[in-house]
Length: 242
Image (cartoon, rainbow, N blue to C red; front, top):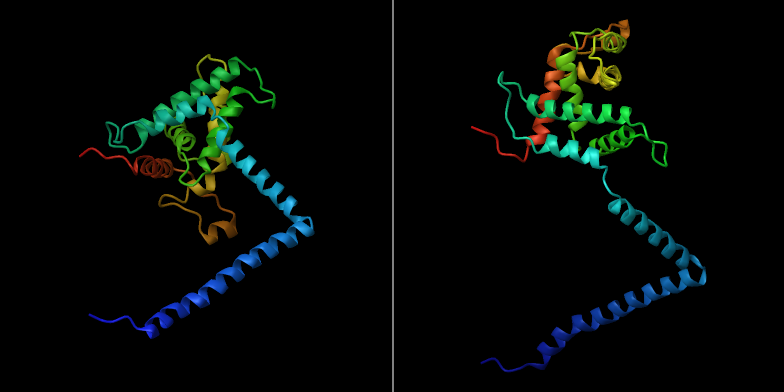
């Protein structure tokens, strides 16, 4: 058995004697900084600023989500993974989203009441859908619905965003208030994404196209490629059928 050695105790205590003054000096330094902030009247300002930021964060977290947007997103996100009868990825879920957004759009036009911010029901829903799509790993409900609408309503290819909009305006629609406006809304969404969408398939903009001002047409394959991307994002955490 090893007898206790005073030298051992001194060696073990030496680091402790070093650490204790260091810890004390750090604590004193923190109090000195707080005292300086208080003397210069900066501490109350910093506290108020932090409280304000925390209040904004809590308010954002507690803001209720738009009911219509939440309903459409749940309908799209919860739809079972898989393909349609012809093997197209994303068509079934996108079709459900497009049908729901169409109903919401038409319902808003038929009941045009506005909220305190001068927004219609569709304005509120659209704002929520866009906000959710811009988040990390954003929701694809609106995008998928627009792609499906383009696949099923447009005569493709179209050479430019202007031609796409003109085609939507000239479409024959059912005698239902708001039907033409919905088509034009979806066409505007696709027109805003025209250049990014026609880079997804074999035809895409090159440097020469840009220099010579040539338009690369938007094809069916471009919209189908985007639907596959949307479907992958939607179903990445879902089990796929064998």
